[in-house]
Image (cartoon, rainbow over all chains, first blue to last red; front, side):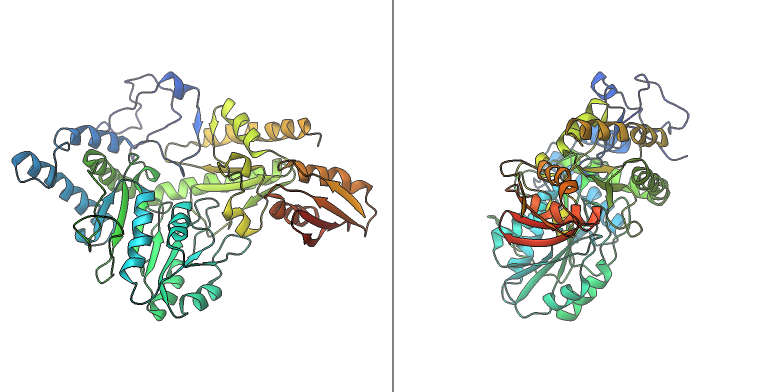
Length: 408
Length: 70
């Protein structure tokens, strides 16, 4: 039996159920967590994997020292960094010297886009990206200036023909494609997009934040980023992989122009925890994906059947195993989010009323699907069938209440 | 032309206004929605698709024409 951890578990502190491996410390739950019986927002941040917690505590012992110093304490820290790097490289099937840890997934995305473009400035300046990239990539694109967007269809899948035409234009320095939509779960045709890039001689950057730890990412990319807290690692650890032969030039001040480095000190204990948890997560990723995908299928089918005037969005087949999004007509997304939170369900929303910008999600807009009344449910390994069923049981009533209040 | 003035109202209110108005619109006629919430540009066509009505287009920024078809 693989180790099981549950953000939703209300077992008393110290109690270890039979299903939990003895080598994994049991997780203690606070009163606050007891009020959140189902945490369904793993796509924002997954609950800390018990292996991450264990590794984090162990690494605090030596991970405080500066790994670039030549004394004994520094060498111990350096060994931790090397071990973490080798672990992640092994997990992803790349060379250790291609792996860099940065302070967040956002920092990694910025470094990939801006560094990838700077390294190719002799070839051109244009950055081609899909319309459904993460805002971290879009912000870097906006800072860069010369950027061209390629659209998606109603299911949120890249328009490959337009992609092929756009990346083969003269002056394209870099192309960026998210491996799978962080908002609707649609898996992107990375292999075909990479092929088009290779034909045009343009390096491809893949933002794999929602895929790593859940599903494999096809090869063919030159740069890849991920975020540890999406797979159950601690927050504050981003991952940047730059394949050999890819020209990358630092967009930041510093000595090392050609190799990515974190800005300032690395949180080494968190990096160790990120690496250990990635290995643990990948060990049973296939089993977890099958189970979570079944739960997502249940949500897709039940929501469509029990909530009137609802649109379940994203590709029903070519999708992430753990993420599902739907929009409810005549419903204020913020009101629904709060109503669910009061019942103990944590979800997120792409509706404009929940965004700091008061604009609807650019992903939902690019797909042309309803943006209000939007709910994203994302599962993690601790999510149980009972969590999902409880969620599905309360949802129709909450939606009906909000509609009634609006006079619908 | 029948008009729905949802200016100053945030989504989903313009869509709710439209849905409440549509039963009073004769089949085949056009209703014009005035809405300044940025989500309306996306959500009015999406509503039409979901409810089987025809989205005619946006004659001006913040103005959306819908033809009742059913």
